[in-house]
Figure (cartoon, rainbow, N blue to C red):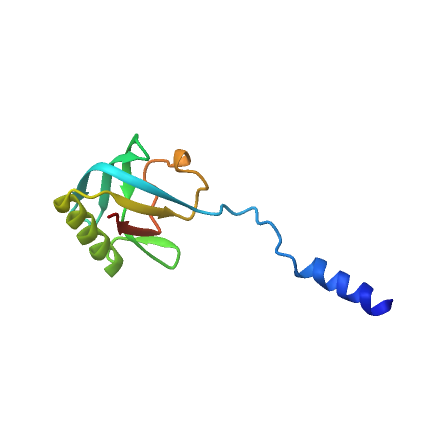
Length: 116
């Protein structure tokens, strides 16, 4: 009996706790233009899941902060330009929101890829 109680208790405590942190979301970016600035800023303006948006930040991140001098910025910018040239949409992962409709100007993507 004691062993069964211990097993039940350990199972309860081993269940993942639901986090208050957002789960993150993948959103499709289409009909976009790309801006890049001398200071290193790189942004996309277009549609997220069909809704017009502006100022999608594609700069890299270092230590949890935007870092437009990071190598990731160059890679994301090259990927966006390649997608634009090929007429493809992008898939952006935002870790800080749980729905694409929650996007706000100047949010930074945490991952970017070209769609088929």
